[in-house]
Length: 75
Image (cartoon, rainbow, N blue to C red; front, side, top):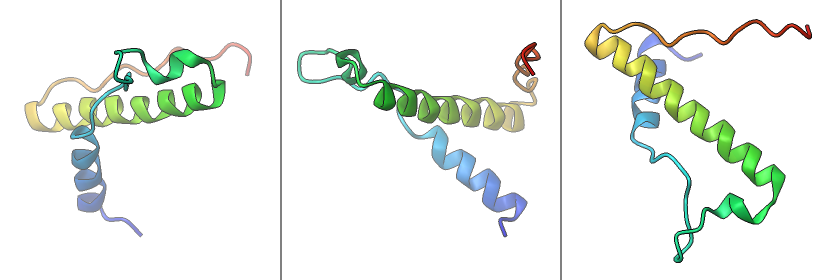
């Protein structure tokens, strides 16, 4: 089971990852070619990186936590 320190260290590691879009040698984002599964997974990874950055920033600087998304009316 992960400890609080393990979670914080994991988030700090995530903040070191570079955001996408990752591009080919011509500067075209890889997801632009059209595989929707790849695009979805890249978005999930980027969301995790952005959330980690926001949470670590809140811890380190005392800033506000990121806003929660609006309620989903479909549920």
